[in-house]
Amino acid sequence: MWCCRLSHLQSRLQDLLRGRVTCWALQQPNFKSLFPLAIHWHHTASKSLNCVWQQHEDHFELQYANTVMRFDYVWLRDHCLSASCYNSKTHQRSLDTASVDLCIQPKTIRLDETTLFFTWPDGHVTRYDLDWLVKNSYEGQKQKVIQPRILWNAEIYQQAQVPSVDFQSFLETKEGLKNFLQNFLLYGIAFVENVPPTQEHTEKLAERISLIRETIYGRMWYFTSDFSRGDTAYTKLALDRHTDTTYFQEPCGIQVFHCLKHEGTGGRTLLVDGFYAAEQVLQKAPEEFELLSKVPLKHEYIENVGECHNHMIGVGPVLNIYPWNKELYMIRYNNYDRAVINTVPYDVVHRWYTAHRTLTIELRKPENEFWVKLKPGRVLFIDNWRILHGRESFTGYRQLCGCYLTRDDVLNTARLLGLQA
Ligand SMILES: C[N+](C)(C)CCCC[C@H](N)C(=O)O
Ligand SMILES: O=C(O)CCC(=O)C(=O)O
Ligand SMILES: [Fe+2]
Image (tube, rainbow, N blue to C red):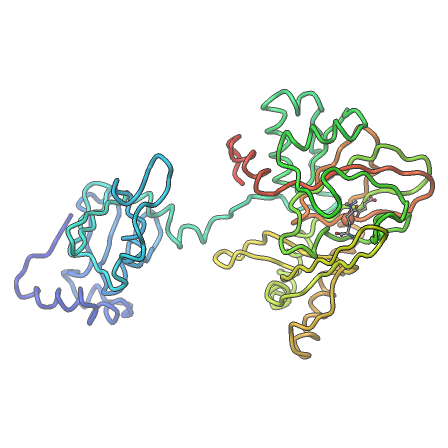
C-alpha cells in the first residue's frame, strides 16, 4: 500500500479525512490533476489487485472489481465478523447494534493483501475481505437478480420443451427433484407425470418439496362444481386469468392442481406468465409499471355459505418489486376479488386504471396464453406469485384436488439442492 508521508501535506490530509475537501475534490472531474500526489486515494502496491480506497468523513469509499462502493461506518462496525461480534457457527450476530455510536468513525484503515482492517476508537479491529465487501455491498447487489427466470409467452414455453418429471424420480431421486425445482424456478410452472390419481399421492408430492399451507379452504382440498363454497371456483363457469388468495396479506406462494376426474367437455386450464406481461408494460410504459408497483390496493373475500364464514383482506400493489434492483417478485392480480379502491385520490385512480388496462391487454394477448388440459396422473405446480391461471367453462363431472404450499419452504428445498432461489 502506498501512503503519502510528506509533512506539508499533513494538514491537507487532516482536512480530507474530516471531509472538508474530500467531497469537493471528488466532484471535480480532474481532481487527480489538481492533486498530483493523489494524497486522498490509497492505492495498493500491486497493480494487479487494482484496489483504491478513501476515508471520507461519513463513509468509506472503495473501488475494487470494477465496482465503486460506499459503506456507512455504522454498517462496517455492525457487520464485523470477529468472534466477539459474530457467531460463525450459527451465522448470527452477537454484537448489540444499539451499542454502536451512530457517529462512529474508524481510527485507522489499512489494507493487507486482500483484507481491509478497520481499527475503531475503542481499539476493536474489524477485518473484511475485499471480495466479501463486493459481494455484500449495495452496489454489488444492485446488479444482481435474486431469482433468475425465463419469462415466457406460449411460443417460448413450448419451444423450450421443458421436460416433465416422473413421479418415481421426483419422489426417490435427488436429480429428479432438482430438475423439477430448477424448471419450476425458471418458468414458474412444472409438471409431474404418472402420479396415481388420488389425493394421498398428490399430498405426498407436495410434502416432498414443502410444507402444505393450510388455509380457509383446508389443507388438501378437493373440489367439484357443487357450490359448496362462496367462490366461483366451485362452479362450472369459465374463470379469467388470476392469481389466488390476493386477499391474504401474504398470498399463497405455490398452488398444486391434480385433476382426478373429468367426464365432460371443456375445462382446460389457462396459464399466463404475469412477469412476462409486466415486462412488456415496463418496456412500453415505464411510468405505468411504476404506478402499478406503488399504488396499494385491497382484495377481499367475504364468505357466508353454510358453515363457512370468512372475511379476508389483503393489501398491496399489483406489482411488487425489490426497491434496490427493481426486480419483480410478486404479482397480485385478481379482478374478481379486487376490493373497493379507497386508498388513493381520484386523479391517481384514473392513472392507475390506465396502467391496469395496459397490463390487462398484455395478459390477454392470445400469444401469451398457454392452454393445457389437466388429466389424472399429471400434477401441475404453479408459482402463484408469478403465473396467472384460469379455466375454460366445462360440462360434466370434474374433480380437482390440490393444495397450496408455503413459499419459504419450497425455496428452502431449492437452496439446499444448490439452486439459486
Ligand atoms: C381452494 N381452491 C383452489 C379450490 C379455491 C380457491 C379460491 C379461489 C379464489 N377465487 C382465489 O382466487 O383466491
Ligand atoms: O377449476 C380450475 O381449473 C381452477 C379453478 C381456480 O382458479 C382455483 O381453484 O383456484
Ligand atoms: Fe384460482
